[in-house]
Length: 235
View 1 (cartoon, rainbow, N blue to C red):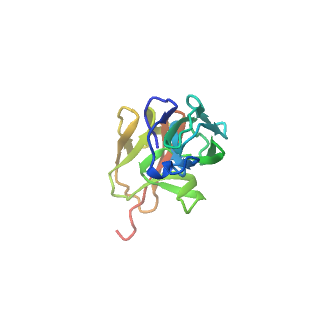
View 2 (cartoon, helix red, strand yellow; view 1 turned 90 degrees about the vertical axis):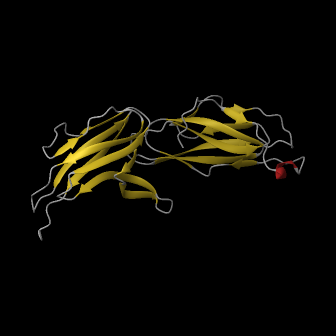
View 3 (spheres, rainbow, N blue to C red; view 1 turned 180 degrees about the vertical axis):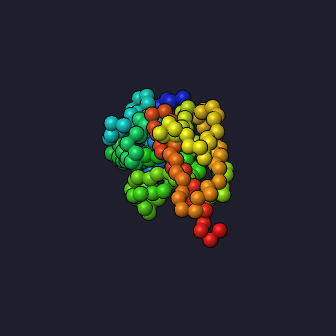
């Protein structure tokens, strides 16, 4: 839910549905999002909720902070149900594991804990991550995962695709490039990127070839293993 906008704490004065004005004593606190998921290098997001009253938001973990004032004073009016937005800042997740934190939202006599889930992964779309363990399998939230690109012996071209929030680099992890794999050198700007790889054919019928790349966005790094399989013996 990355939103590249100026970080201000705002309360948009938008009327809600007609049911909000049926009772002059109506009070409510209704979240818009049930949970918010971020990648490891995402540092800003927001949470939204409906209320008639003044409100406060309080982070419950040290890696989440409120950008701007953590409260909004609203004069109660049973005819106006406000859509409110609180902007938050999140520190990069360099642990390599998923972490979960909450922000406490309070309004009138109501409160709820808004969960923020920050993955230990960068947003790499190709290859897709291989999950070692799950934080919540039912919701498809990995706890620990890694990236592995597997090519056949005769495959000579592939790519790595990703969407990052900072300037980035993609280099060989051991700083020594193997003679069978070349990585395209292109400027590393934030956003959607595709880096082309060139491979030579693997003529070995016994051994696969393997190299490890390090993708870095800001303070976050993920390893991407490139494997090229041996020639099938039946050939």
